[in-house]
Length: 456
Image (cartoon, rainbow, N blue to C red):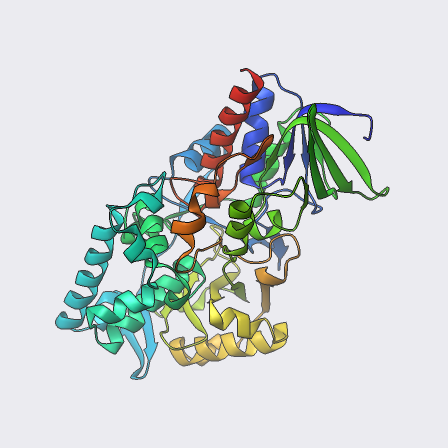
């Protein structure tokens, strides 16, 4: 590979990198995609357990996510709706309560307060330009405070703040104290509102792909020209010179190099910052990735012989403010067996869970489910989880977030190319930032950018 030169090297074979490669090869450019893992798909990961596929990473798509919906359709794959039939359970200081909908677990004043809080945040979000959040009319003010500080200024009661915090951590895999208000507002705007982020029907959790999400990436990769994909190839350095770019690679056969005219870096910001650059990146770009930590999440799946909760009129959704796991879903496959309850340790709870063994995490999850849905929840056939912060080529999910003060100081460097280096990844997307659809959006954008730089 040391003697090979291509038009473009793409670093990372997640949906952003694969989309960029697809667009570039479709335009007749020679491309090599370098992926450190033994697989494609990035922050998606589909495995088989107890005879069924499960998604240990990203799994849902929803209305408005036109790019991933179109890709699934183009590949001839089928989707099915996230099940919601049955009563939900709220587990909090009052114990376990069955409700037809989680909204019914709160009195009228609490619901009004919650809706007013969300409405106020959406009003801010509408004022944040998707392409340049730092240019919002009150950007400095909104970026100077955390989302948690802003919630406190609203004077909401503890139960409302707790409900909102469950939603925040479910969306960002970080606590409201870790997020800039400006960042949260931009994220909302990129998706079209709070309900788009948090709802199943009509929202980002509406549908799933039969067979799992990683196979979508695998099919996308399989359609690239032969020789494009290189697995087990971790990029260690990127050196720019007058005639192009030289990429240093750690490969199974030993260190090697590859030359290109341009390079697309399509890995999470924290990983992009660990590549050695020559000349070094400018201070603004380097500081940007230092101020973009990944979220913290452990995604779990509890497997049962059958979805027994359905016979008891339960949906499998548990909302548990104050517990280590905030929310669960019925993710039983379309075949109806085995039964599958899925959920997350998120934010600070995920960091703490990362210090535990999988067996210890299993005990925590099963205990919460038993207190919420009954003792039958302890009759577990299997348990599996994935700590995405421990993944060496991810270092956290679902995406990166910006703490107070970061957007207005470092934000302009997010998408701006540096010489022959271009940046992709869901964090750089203007629409559906943090989602698979955003990753595809960024791949399309960066491919157009590279083609323009190469002369079409």
